[in-house]
Length: 92
Image 1 (cartoon, rainbow, N blue to C red):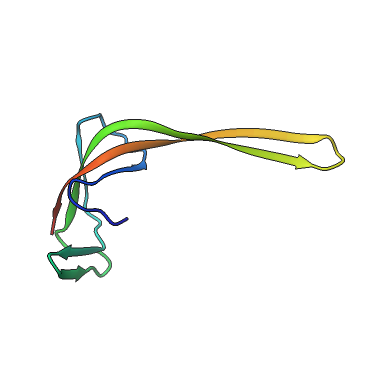
Image 2 (image 1 turned 90 degrees about the vertical axis):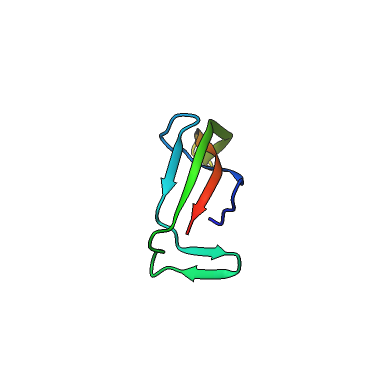
């Protein structure tokens, strides 16, 4: 996922308190003012610091299965868990 400083985005649920910071150190590519560094497979010493703003649920998705002429119907629902985060800094 491509991110920039002060960007707000939704990611799959992170088990962290609201207001806490989370660091990701598996960075594949860094663009620092036009200087591009590509990792093999990751960039050494690079990390992204995020702040967890809130936990949220996505929209409900309904899954409906039916077999014709058999009287078989099945309905399942799912709501994905998300975390809203803000990118605080990118360390290259």
